[in-house]
Image 1 (cartoon, rainbow, N blue to C red):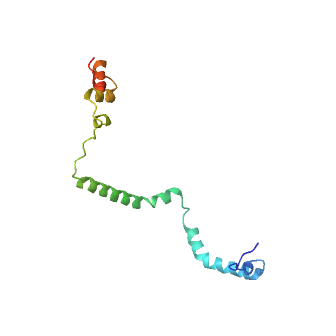
Image 2: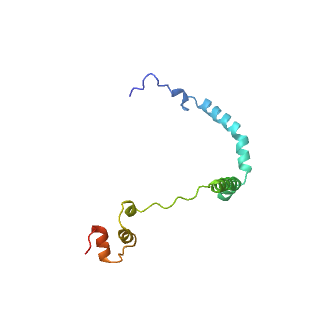
Image 3: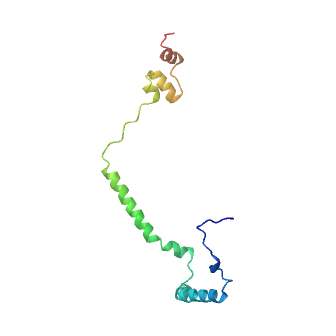
Length: 122
């Protein structure tokens, strides 16, 4: 397996090469982390309720801001609602009898529907 010219030799990082150096490094890291570990140990165990309670105020603030923005948009909307669009049957120019049949599924009379569709009197 060829690594190319960008390969770095990671052998100096192997803890088995110099165990004393490794233990000194671990000891210095633990000494630096000791104050933070002590602070965390003194805190009560953080449960789910404690985590959720820390989000109550920000969540309520965000909800109030969103509600205020939505109310503003609704109050500033002065344009009336558009009239309902004509049905496809009306748009195609079919007579009233055909439109009523398509919308309700019932024709007033079969003769009226036939005349409307074919334009022929029976």
